[in-house]
Image (tube, rainbow over all chains, first blue to last red; front, side, top):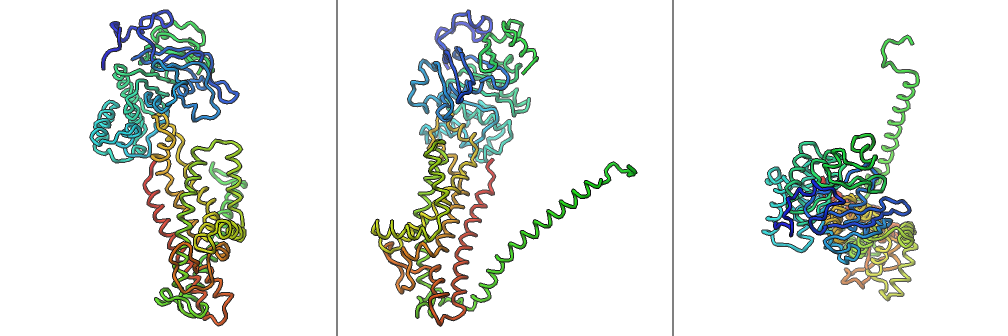
Length: 276
Length: 294
């Protein structure tokens, strides 16, 4: 993987600067302006402005009903499948306004998604990981085998399943299934990986293993990490946004937030566990 | 309280347990009652009909208005009708179910279609027969033929195919679809790779129901393609044909001097055809379900 242009700064540069004041190290991969999401008459999210830079892990924390998942769904244009969902505002991904992209299937194939509850599809482990390449028309068995092995290795699952690739992926344990989902997302060769509370159904040891994987993946792709574990955001994210009740309350370098730099009282309260 | 044990039953708990026992055995008794007609029917048919069973009964064509000879042409005719009805109803029904389950939005059109399906399922078979005469025999000029009769049977059985298939597609978790869509799959790719392979049991249920009705129904075919007596095997879908169900009606009510065992033997054949088809489909379905997928 080549470094992004003009990144002579080290990858953790973002951590040392405050988010709003620092000049962007490079053009944002994902840029959100005035995002508002409604389900029928119910407002799920409004007034959100966020820039996500290439090769950063961007954390989103906040209690239930804060609009975190809706935010991810809007990026991926999943409103197509939810008739009542209305998205206003601008989302620019890799320089394109996602609402002007006709071929949503191509957009989605550039964005990997991992859900809170692991979704092992009722296919073999091999077919789970080979699904996305196949959806894009790749059929060469050797190609697929190479992709499956590479992605399972990167998701730290290969050693556990290499001898039973033909068994059903949906029957793996929860933690294994979640790594399978990550392998599947990686098989898309995504530029952006959206993780929605991935550790909710995963034991702590597996969570730590996945976190290690994510740290390595940061070299190659950009990650938006929605999490209900405040400490997880602290461990992984360069910058973190705090969502509450459908609004983005605060965006700051994670270290600043946790070292008492949070400006909004609600953020401070949430980080200190007084609610949520 | 004088009782020493903290777990001794109070009066209320005693009643509760008694009611529970009564409910359990009461419902068991009612369930067992249901077995009586099922076993009774089969027993009567076997006892009365078995003497009529012979190789010639199945291989000979009926003679003397069905009073003598076998049922070969009726048996073959029923196979024709069932196969053609299946060939029409199954693809159409599955296609409609795919649309309703995977594509249709919840709007007035979808709701109208759903109401129509439910009502179609409730239409008496004799009404379907009259519709078949009007639509297929006369309007589409199929004449009285296997094709017209099969179309009528297909229209009659479409609702059950649609409902059974749609239900089993709906039983495939939504999360699977979302995972697929998020990877950039189109709706059709998702249906083809994930939803349909896991809806096999519903499609099979639809198939069983179609077969059972196509084999058993009499009214819809007697005006559209089935005849009382025909010595030739059908040679194509525009031929008229005999059918087991209509033959049973004929030999039981329309023809005199029929040996006593003949109607029972025909009925037993009818039941055996249905039961064996059912057994086959159930076995197949159990194999599908045996592999737990999630």
